[in-house]
Amino acid sequence: MKKLVGFIGWRGMVGSILLDRLKKNNDFKNFCSIFFTTSQFSLLAPNVLNSISSKLEDAYNLDRLITLDIIISCQGELYTKKIYSKLKSMGWKGYWIDASSYLRMYSESIIVLDPVNYNSINDALNKGIKTFIGGNCTVSLMLMALGGLFSNNLIEWVSVSTYQSVSGSGSKSMLDLLNQIGIAYKNIHSYLSLSNKSILDIEKIFTASLNKINCINNKIKAPLLGSLIPWIDIPVENGQTKEEWKGSAETNKILNYKYNIPIDGICVRVPTLRCHSQSFTIKLRKNISIKEIQSLILSHNQWVKIIDNTLDSTINELTPLKVTGTLDIPIGRIKKLNFGDKYLSAFSIGDQLLWGAAEPLRRMLNILVN
Ligand code: NAP
Image 1 (cartoon, rainbow, N blue to C red):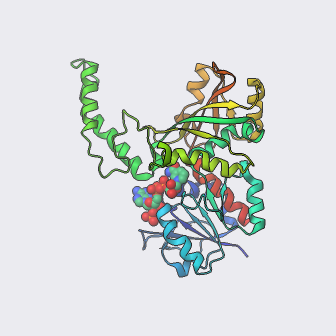
Image 2: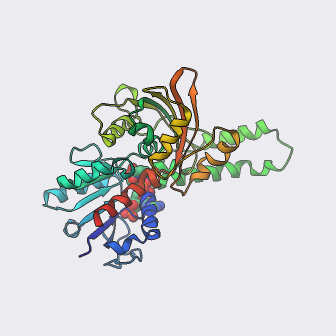
Image 3: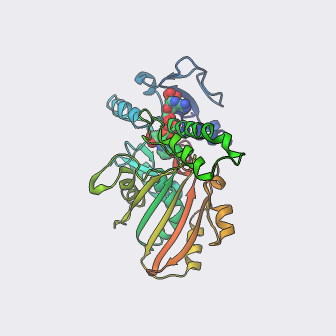
């Protein structure tokens, strides 16, 4: 009999990408589906193969949720916090797959990224573990890019600077940035084709119009267009942000090696709409050639692509605009650093809504239903 899968949060950014990928891969044929909502109660559910209810159902209805074999939630951590333990305490024995961070570090959960930790996922299933959580977006994208170096025990530590797009903060933040673009354009567009204002006068009008925007009700509390914010998420110990803390904690949980690999850096929100980029400084355990490094990186998975360390290749292949909407993980700017021959730089980009969020969940669902 086909498993019954409940979709929560399918309307959000991660959820709608997940839905799109499931449709494109014809995955709905493998299970029966019910779609839930926290806000659109009387509306129609998406029309997919094997859907057993044409209307959206209430995502807080525990009596309905307990009938499901698998719940896949892209609703966010508040929802998980509210529902997961209640459902477990009611004796629910199903599988929980989640995009939010809430359960990632629980001992009863596995962070899923099967091109990197398929064996851990398999072991967990054999042990009866039922909670499978997608990793932090930059962590998953880093592991897809550098997996060949991690798995060959070549990395002593990584220092990373991220350049994270606004969609990483949810659909509301994306709308806030688009509104800022509209406001700025309205203020300067009449000067753009005339020569009656100097470029620095236009810059002053542009900057003043953005600084005047009231961001109190925005998720990102400051204007982002024409700017950047070197802080993501709440503060934790040692001056780190939670996003920076996740870099080391989650990577080491996914890799599950006997030793800890130090990873740290600064996470930065930038005014791109989609895709997270990362600049890495890596201390290698031994001196190996760039050619060997490239070949190990390439042999790890089918999505990672080496970009030549040239201007043309970089501007054509290593930009968020090029990568958006694809599963590609380009990695370029690979070179040895002046610090010594065990020090390496690299720059990688990935669509954080795909490999950074929806795709590991879709693949985990397929592991369960197949
Ligand atoms: P989101 O776009 O804000 O969607 C979350 C929920 O907000 C939706 O399911 C929907 O619930 C509601 N919603 C309210 N207004 C909406 C609108 N205008 N359009 C669509 N939905 C709207 O959140 P998300 O970015 O997908 O993130 C979901 C979870 O995944 C979070 O825990 C996040 O931390 C995690 N995550 C996100 C990313 C990322 O890049 N965004 C990456 C990795 C992990 P109802 O239909 O019930 O109203």
